[in-house]
Length: 175
Image (cartoon, rainbow, N blue to C red; front, side, top):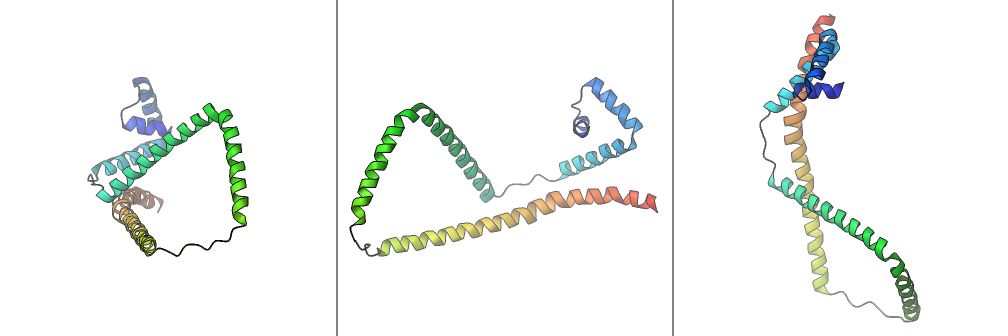
């Protein structure tokens, strides 16, 4: 029935179903109140100004979507490859494991000291850590801006005001 409320408000119900729904509304004040509340919420949301999404958020969403599409494609390709070549890969994989085992056993007896750290590698590592820290901080700040400026002010506040306005007349009738 709740799905019909939205369809009714959007004029998506067929004529016969719309007539039956209006008959139910005429006999049930509870559903009439639900339709009134849904209409207030819909009109309140439509009255909100259209906001521009910050470019950083748009770019982040596009990047993540592209990555998920790419990953999904890779997963399907990998599954297809496994299905097509699983019988062919098993002997090659077994041979690779044997070769790696032989090489590992031969290297265990050797004692080599690690090469001295390269200053360029250490600097590059420090640069990467700093860049990751900056990206992490920017992500946290973006999340706070979206939560505080967009969701709290533009969605939660108006809906909460509409619900409070709806509850005030019922409080007066109970007194």
